[in-house]
Length: 340
Image (cartoon, rainbow, N blue to C red; front, side, top):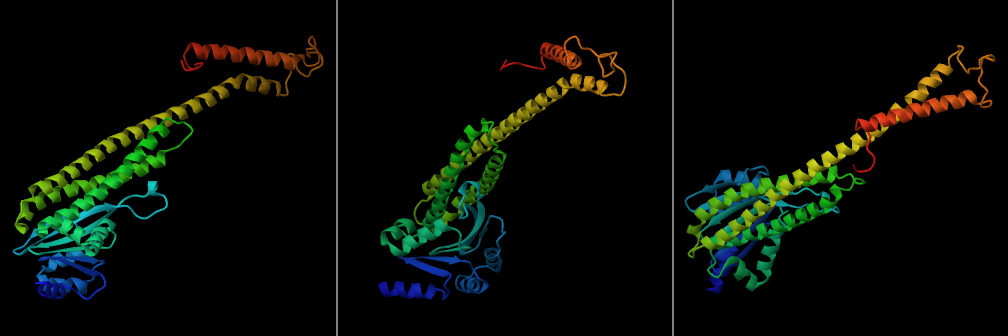
């Protein structure tokens, strides 16, 4: 029996560094990173994959879908991943494409190598027999293995969601801090939520179709397993919907507070400019080369308060005018003292 499995493992292997294979009982899992046309053509000849499916695997912009054939099923799923960056708070998730061929005794996963959770679970299965039995199932059915793969990727999605929720909580306190400008942080979070929400919506639809068609690749009832994954995806969607509403509230609040702050600044500047008008007008009149009471004309010069009598009179008129304007502004409600 062991020699037969070994021969089967050797027969399904492809001589390429991007292809790795695990065999457990009668189930084979082939993982292809950064697929090339040559590798995919070899797999197509061995498992009779359709040419259109091969083109979909090589394309990086294929939309999520499920294609059902006589002896196998092909699906394309999009999953969000976080790029490696020093500043994770400003990193926007990117959507990576995972193509899966599901047959009666095999699964072929094809991706561009940026699905780290998938690589981790594959390496664990390759190195540990207990992990291999747990992931691939004791019955070694391709339907159960597909559930394990999707469940692992959905769990990784929750790691990204927890980071988003944490950033939302950090922004909540900063929104009401007038000393901070967080418009950029809010915009980054809105974009992150939008990318994740789009991926989860597509994933919900694909999983519903998969759960309805994958049972023929397993001898055990997989309904509860796929229902559990659907519950997780629904929970992720609820978190994203709540986060979307929350960030919209923060955006509106930040815009309102920024507008109010700008209006207050403009009001103060306008009032200061208005209060300076009397002094400007009086100074303009006395700066003219004409005879005015108290001017530089010797006979009209005021000196009953000393040599600066004219200047003092102008200052007192200006102050009186300013005080009158302040009283009038307060009476009309244009100037408020304190918070009331």
